Amino acid sequence: MSSIDREADRQALRRAVGGEGEVRFDEPMERHTTLRIGGPVEAWVAPASIAAVQRVRSLCALHNWPCRAVGAGSNLLVRDGGVRGVLIASERLRDLAFAGRTVRAGAGVATGKLLSEATRRGLSGVEFLGGVPGSVGGGLVMNAGTTLGEFKDVTLRVRSVDPRGEVIERDGAACGFVYRGSAIPPDEIVVEGELALRERPREAIESDVRNLRDRRRAREPHGVPNAGSIFKNPPGDHAGRLIEQCGLKGRRVGGAEVSPAHANWIVNAGGARAADVLALVDLVRAEVRSRFGLQLELEVKVVGHDQESHGHAASQ
Image 1 (cartoon, one colour):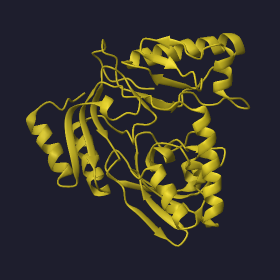
Image 2: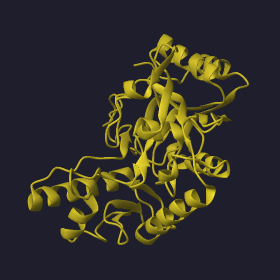
Image 3: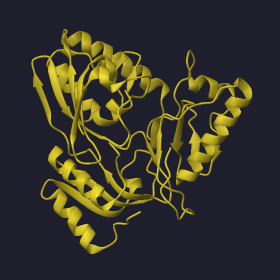
Image 4: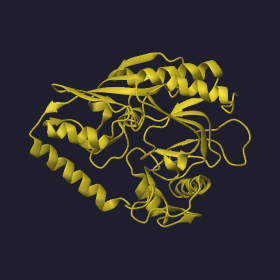
């Protein structure tokens, strides 16, 4: 597998981005994840246009460099050994345009920004984003949502860039949205979504969002690095309830801790490594499987390779 360590390769990547974005090499991913954990990536790229994403993907295909999206880093655990190849951050893809009740949002638009702009216009449909961190791109890929709804309820179209650098457009039905997931191919990078909203009194929207945020604030940890929910809820139950019933609130491995505030959140209580988080994940899974006969499925995405690994990057 090619490595981006020659100056000629680095210059080629800089040229692909051009003046439309930023490139950093050997960039610590702890700077770009809400868990504040992660080893270095060979090349961290933040394109500011869809065309720049296309050029970077084409270059990666030419050189056989691994390439994937990282979104806003709010649902991501990067292993301690870092990541080979290129990680494309969506943070500069921030175009947000309203046309009547339709909104086109770049992958890097913060979920809170989308919600506030829709609310200001009296447009309903994304109230479920109240208190949900992250960006539109990651939200679409994982069909983010709450009790008030999810992305599949409002998505008209999704645009992504495939490994060859071609733009792919799908309507909402073709995205194959499921609970906290979608059928959008993992080797494509979502760059834009088009959503269909509806008119509703602003006061009613604000009331629903305020109630949702209050509920989340009352039960979720604050002021400590985290990645949100670690596990998906099993059908008809809640991962947090199962973990709490196992008496695991407050359980620690190194600097990683099962949050005392919400058992389905693993937080970085101080100096945690990815290895600590993954060891705690294994412990929680084993306890829940032993007591309830259920295998918890990760909601957080894990990428990269372990420090002692010298082979290809592993992910799950």
